[in-house]
Amino acid sequence: MNDKMTKPVRKQIYLAAFRKWGFEAQHRQLMEECAELIQATNKYLNLPTEETVASFVEELADVEIMIEQIKLQTDYLLLEDRVEKQKESALLSLKTRVMKDKEGSE
Ligand SMILES: [Mg+2]
Image (cartoon, rainbow, N blue to C red):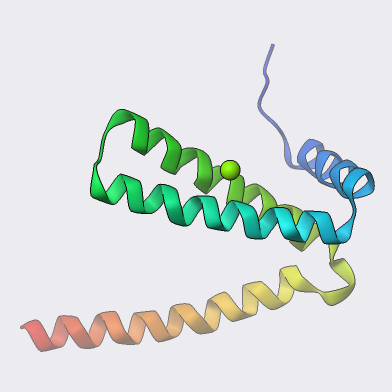
């Protein structure tokens, strides 16, 4: 049996989670997962072991899940589109900085 979660299956799970726990609880869960990711990143950088890498990976996944969930649930704010536009803008800025640093080092 293939256990891979397709996008429609994920969407169903995200919507069910929002129905079960509600808007505020899911936003608080996002904050909690971000805090856990901060801690896991720090531990992994301080001491890279199988265990700290596994925790880092787990928390990255948790944060991504919460972000996907929030973006889906708050459709009325057009978060998905707005985040994509913001990413484009941030990436252009990053590209400029990266290229500038590259020119500076040559
Ligand atoms: Mg977590």
